[in-house]
Image 1: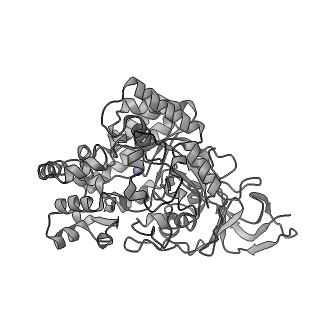
Image 2 (image 1 turned 60 degrees about the vertical axis):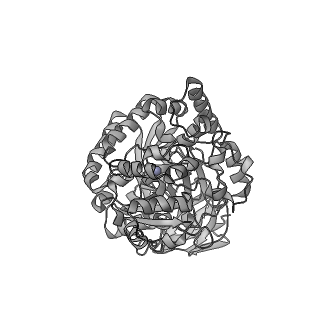
Image 3 (image 1 turned 90 degrees about the horizontal axis):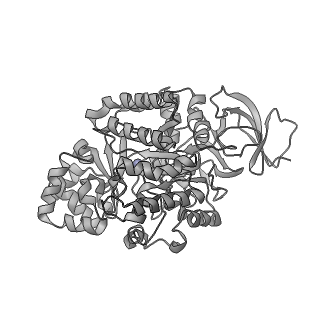
Length: 525
Ligand SMILES: [Zn+2]
């Protein structure tokens, strides 16, 4: 006998095919029947007339990396219908931890309030074993980060690795994959990962290609050199045999908006050539990262201790200002378009740098340097730097998926501060604003992009579609009302229009309330 039957729903099955009206029965963690089930009985029968039932959403770009270990219910993700998060992006997986990077990964300022068995969380196997033990509300699909790998072997220096170090990095990649990682990620604007040459990236990605894994690529430059950086990732895929996934596609900075289309054409050509290349994006015109990313790359070398020294030195500050005018994030930013998100000094949150600098009587540069010193780097920013036209245009590519680029958060409590609204609103915004209101895609195709398509890319055999025998990761929503509510000033707001979110057959969200169920599993294939 089934445990639950959803009656009279509009089934959008994740394949892209037209919706159809049917009942759907769940038993245990599995979809057991689809069709006219009026003779079937179950303890829980739910009439969902007028609502869509579809596969749970797969967040192709999640940063619920370390945080899932202490926020395992990941409310912000579940409330938007996400049932699987692909984590460890932008080079920044929480493992491996070794003597070379432990002091950085275990920065006492950051972890002082977090009680975890840190020594168990130093390898992919240890980390995933811990998650399985505590249980998570959604499924986790892990990636190992190239930045983490490099720091574990070479530390934070910009030096070229020796042959022995190259081999050690490859071995760590192999070990992480043996223990559950599905590929490697890069974040080539963040040191120390950014110190790697193309040749080095090819070498560390070879084990991924050999095992049929994926190269998840936050490219070297999403602004002035978007085209060159896209060519580099394609070359890495071509030379290693790894599938390629271009992370959070964007053309950053007004002067670069026209580069979006030619960059997508490079991906079109790679697909035509037979490479397995895909991409994801978030449906916003602003990005977010740490304020420290405004500093020139050379000024970020060596980790926090060295950065603090440079920020405290007058002559070095002048040198930094000179570099910032020509390279890095700042060269594409405008001070009244950079909003401070979370900060260990809450007085800064929700204000633009132009305003903060003016109030304090400092230049914007000095304000940034002082704020980084004061918060010891614990300060985030939101940059308005993309084009709305491009956001819509990019969804037209058949390989374009959706990712939050955010960690799983709670809506209240000490961790509920400083966020880009994408953390709470990405998927409802995609389906409400872009699909329903602006009609960028038919609903069936939109659901395919966030369920069936990512499941295909990730090699899932029993998720991402509504099929008999598939795992019951499901979302029930009202296509007429689904929408995000989070905005840049008040990001901690739940979306509307989602009635049920099921993970492995268990109800995790019911009418905007998290049930505290933790049915998630590690999904590595
Ligand atoms: Zn990234």
